[in-house]
Each structure stands twice: as structure tokens, then as C-alpha cells.
Image 1 (cartoon, rainbow, N blue to C red):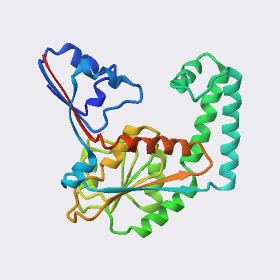
Image 2: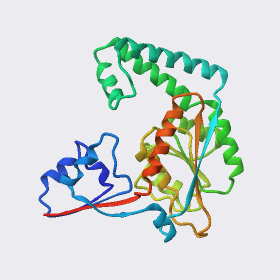
Image 3: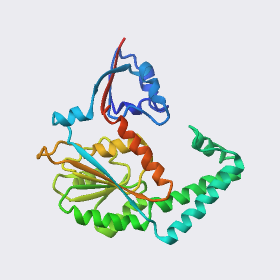
Length: 286
């Protein structure tokens, strides 16, 4: 049995596949073995131990992957946006103090979500945090920076990534760029991704993994989570080898300064420390 994108297998909804099948030979493939919930520690009993790893630098050197560079651009939110952000984030911090929850501990946010079902202060904390992050992730200043990036990179096949579909549609309308969301039909996706069809497309999460974008050279993250898996998978959309081996793929992050998004970006940056473990195979023989 071969499991592609094996990092999904440890999830409660999928792990029964490995537990119930009697297959004596198992192989798992993934570029992002580690999970935020630590369930990757169950892979030895579900599939087997790691038997092969190919480093990203090695794959690029042998022309299996394109080399790449990452750039981070910080933008200042508009004054009215910053005022609203500070109001909601301040309320979030006050609510955390009321319930005595410190978010620097592992699993604290999950605990906050669980508490929100029975605690008014916890629920208000979640809502205030979400409002603050929505303002930071969707700042109008980001769209102005995106405009500059697109103007300076005309002709490059570009993928724009966002956290929510609302921003996907806003970018599509403003810049006349085709979009791909979970609502896009198979035919629409194939048409948008056809090599040479469009110079730029905008999407939320549906292109994060399992999709080949043949000629993509530039990725722009307008908003996203702190998930290392999401970040590496988005970078992976750009790493198909280029006809010109000296040409680098480029990923640009646009970040709202002086907000929690700075921490989100830092968390993604730490994922790069593990990116050399780019291709992992797990296998077992019973």
C-alpha cells in the first residue's frame, strides 16, 4: 500500500485506513512530515520509520527542483485600520486575563476554543481575536503593495495566496485576475492552470498541495496561517525545474507590521529550518 501525502494519514478520519488494512508492505510519501498536532509521532506504527530523505538543496543541485529565494515585505496598515485592530486585540488580551489563560503555552489556543463553548469571556476573546486578525490579514495597504509587485514582475507566471475567499474575490475584481476556489469546477481549474494561459491566478487553499502548476515562478502570500506545512506546500507550487536552470523561483510574503501577523510570519520562517528534509519516505515490512 502506498500513501501519497502521508502526513494526512495520522488524522482521526484517515488513520483507520492504516489500522484496518492488513497490507504487509507500506510506503508513505510526503514533503511535510511534521504536523502541528504532533500526530506525526504515530507514523512508525501506522506506516513505518523514515528510510529515505532527500534534501531540498540536493534536489535543486541535481535539477529535480528549482532553486528559490524568499522575501518578506512589511506594510503599515491605514490609521483607521490600526485603530480598529488595536481595539479588538486589546479586548482579546483583557478577556484572556479574565480567564487566566496564557497563550504562549502549547495547546493554549485549542483550550481557548474549547472554553468558548461555556465561557462568555472565552467566546469574546475568540471573536475579538478573529476580528483583529481579519483586519491585519486584509489590510488595504497589502493590496497597494500587491499592485507594486505585479507591476514589477509582469510576464512572470504568478500565484497569489490568501487565507480567505473574500480576499480572493477582492483581488480578482480589482486586478482582473482569474481565481480558483473550492467552488471552481474541474474544467475551470484546468483552464486557469494551463501552461501559458494566464500570467497570474489568485487562490486561497485549494492549490496548497497536490496540484501541479507547470510554469509558476513567483508566489505572493497576501495572507495565511502560521502552519509550516501550508507554507512549505505553497513554496512547493513554484519549485518545478525551470528551462533556465539559473532562474530562481521567488516567494514574497506581505505582512502587516506591528500586528500578530509578525508572529505568524516568524512561525512560517522557522519552517524553513526544516525545509532541507524536503522529501521523506516512510516504509514498513510486516
